[in-house]
Image (tube, rainbow, N blue to C red):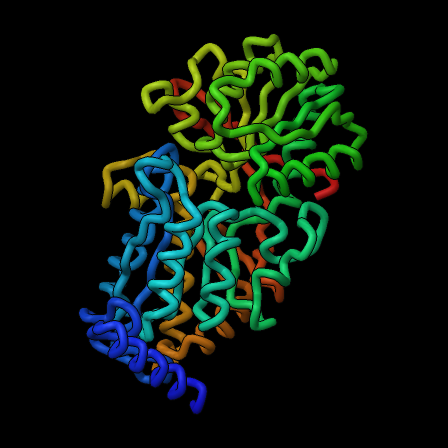
Length: 421
């Protein structure tokens, strides 16, 4: 308590010195909340890239989040939950930016009524927002991050991960999507199943892309799939013909890009396909219409037919009853029978927060109580299936779906059982 009063004094002193009128976040519309128990209203934010190649995917995520709130009338028991969508991208960049991610996290960190932050979409953005929110702390639930190093030092993590993201020494971040040790193994298994003898990996050098590339390479070694190369690219390069030539001359018969659409993915696949590699693979980082649909700037149909993409979502009929109901409800609300694969993750992220808030009752507005309760998630029967959250903040879900591209849309093909994953 003494620390909080000192912090408030410092804030007020600084405000007077600068001629400012307030301390803290944008709480003008809040009806209550705060760090203690018994608040009438709490705030939940999402931070997602709502501009650029990921826009269709993240828009569907926001729609899923809003559906979860609407279904309970914005109430978690006796607590009113106010949802605000934040954008961590810019129109100029066409993707997330460190500055926007940092600004969003700081805005939420300064809001006394904030109890949860749904995000980020990109693992690199979470590498920036986690430490900011950890200092408060505020619970952070990601519906999309898969980079291993955000939660553990298992293979795929970089030096200093994950400890460097948690300055307090305690965890506040969790995710409901399987991490890249599983996705890497799924992609390696898929290539092996498809008869690949040698695969070449190019990555975008981001936290997500570089880490997943290491996971794919490690999993390939365990199942006897040769990796001819694993190199980073310059995402801003006008073309990748020289890299495509290197891939071809290496003798690789399969290619996988480890990165996101915004980092040159469309041009890269065009160039590799033109070089004569006909077995092309990608991760969830390119599982969006900005990559798959030529009308959205995606790859041409001729090359798209050679691509398979891994996503931690399944065909609607493979989900439990709760999941099938979600698709029905989503269609009824938005008129979309085949929503983007990650809409269901946006829904579950908010549903988890809402259900946890309801269980906490008057303690929902206690930030640490929310974190502790989320980390105690065990045997949760959800739209995604039944899962736990472990001590690192990882889900126990492991299924990855494999999608092909047909008519510009991602079409579910099969569920992959990842050898070595």
